[in-house]
Length: 150
Image (cartoon, rainbow, N blue to C red; front, side):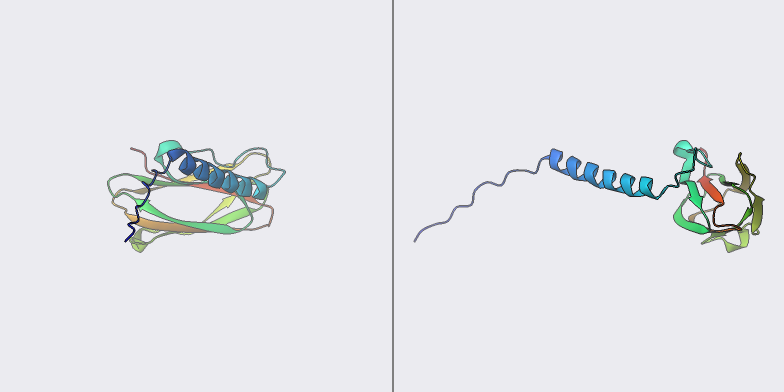
């Protein structure tokens, strides 16, 4: 009887995994960059750094977002800004704390310089959250951050 031997398997190289990750990131960045409006000269809201749970630098027209990861030991702040005329109406929702949802609010959007509004939500919040942003015109640009500074 002939015995079969199996050749030793070579370990996977991290280079192949890094190349795949780089390709995926490049494709994601290309898709995101392709969706940005050509007239935008800057973000409505700048990058919040490591304190940011979510950063929406710029969206045009009505949209929204959902996320998670609020930590109950840190203060929570939401910031919305807009530019381009008209206004945005913001409805922000806390999944596990609906009694602490801020009332829907409106931000007037000047032409030229973004208007920013920051609301403190306090500590003791955990879990998911989301926002619906309704723009008064399809060309109104807006952005948002949710931060928990340490």
